[in-house]
Image 1: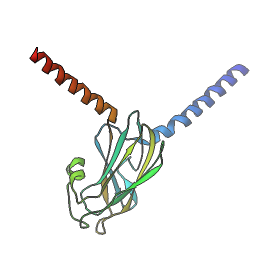
Image 2: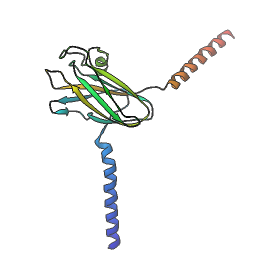
Image 3: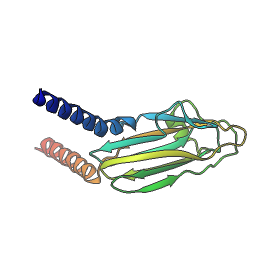
Image 4: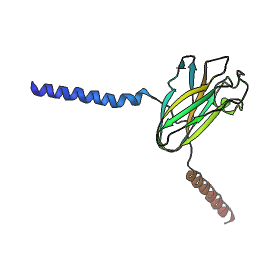
Length: 178
């Protein structure tokens, strides 16, 4: 009986400790590093309808984070992070407040010069991010931002690819001459 109580206590304690370690990792959303745009929404009371007000990104390769406004010109954002490096990125508003802009996709919004946007490059590693609004349009306290994480090829990979292509062209020309 004594042995059974000791084992049960150990098992319950070990399970609780494991859950305590694992739960925080799942509590924060993970932004995929696949180049897809995710949407962050807010309303008068703060972040709404989105898990991306606080999120994590882990990558074995260098990557970039892009943030751009959704639809209403005039919103600004602050992206902060901790991890291998700590820092922040503030976007700026460019157009006239309240004007409608590109809403159909993150790429369209990124390419619209009237919308606020910003990007930052990161070394491989795990990072914790938080996204907040620093300014909203006066007529509309609700809005959103597109967020994208995408891997960036290392310069050495590009150099290797270029060298490989050049050597293939040289080899093909030699075969034609022979």
